[in-house]
Amino acid sequence: MTAMLDEAAADPQQTIAELRRQLDERTAERDEALEQQTATAEVLQVINSSPGDLVPVFDAMLEKAMRLCEAAFGILWLYDAGRLNAVAMRGVPGAFVDFAREPLRPGPETGLGRLLRGERLIHITDISSDEVYRSGDRLRVATVELGGARTLLLVPLRKNDALLGIVSVYRQEVRPFTDKQIALLQSFAAQAVIAMENARLITETQEALEQQTATSEVLGVINSSPGDLAPVFDAILEKAHSLCGVATGALSLTDGGVARTMAIRGAPRAYAEAMGQPFRPPSESPIARIMQGAPFVQIPDMAELARENPDDSRGQAVAAAGLRTSLFLPLRREGEMIGYITAYRREVRPFRAETRCSGIS
Image (cartoon, rainbow, N blue to C red; front, top):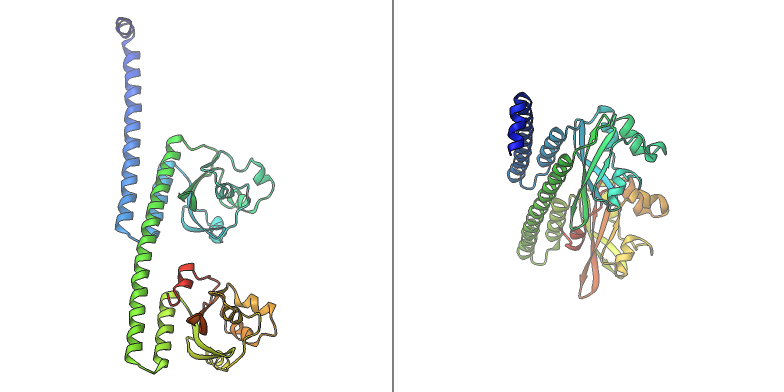
């Protein structure tokens, strides 16, 4: 203590300058921590005020992350069936936007690909100087040449080790992110996972309620139409379409291996007339497969199936009507198939497992 006092007395101006420097550093640290806490609180407020709506959450998170991490642009990707889809973008250069909007299957050595393999964090100081860029990887080349990116930070969105998505921020100069900025982005990623889980629970609750209501309404039609199946079939199709995003569908009965359409909804007239004729399904057709015991059959793209089976007239009619993803669900009584429900979408968009299993949901 005596030595410090002696030193201060010897050079008071230097001591004052050093104390001011330390004060400025502490003040800057305090302000940075306060700004991060404020940003985190604001994102949580958006989550609370937008239950089930992820778009404003993702936008708010990207805006805060880019500002506090001093990034040029950012993208939030959701992961589904091996592909990454950009669901939120901020500050992305126009030349890179169209590329980023395409569903991506990243190469295994790209930053996104490494996260898919299980890495916890990707931080690359200069993405234009590594082997992935030199090898001509499509994603890496587009990121550098269309986005102008150099330094890259990627943080995964995970729940119980399952990858839900990725948040990525980019700098257009070679300048690594600090440990504090990395920790902040990880915090935002954790908040995004919470928002996604909340949205999932809300959606599941709403869907369960809608399914219960639909079942109750169909039972009401059955009770009010004893012996008359036409309104029952129509009601089943109407509920299936409204709950499943179905464009066209039909309910058919089977007898002795022959199928007959009893109700059809949302179909063009020519298609409806073609489907209305009794027929015996070919041995390898989706209908034959559920007749043989399959719990359901889903065809991701009927156009592709029609190309592979040019002699299947009904499959050709389906493709000609512009119908793509299809789902076939059997109607069984005491284990014996008595009919089936067919549901079509006009885009390639597979039905979820819970939809397939619930019949009309």
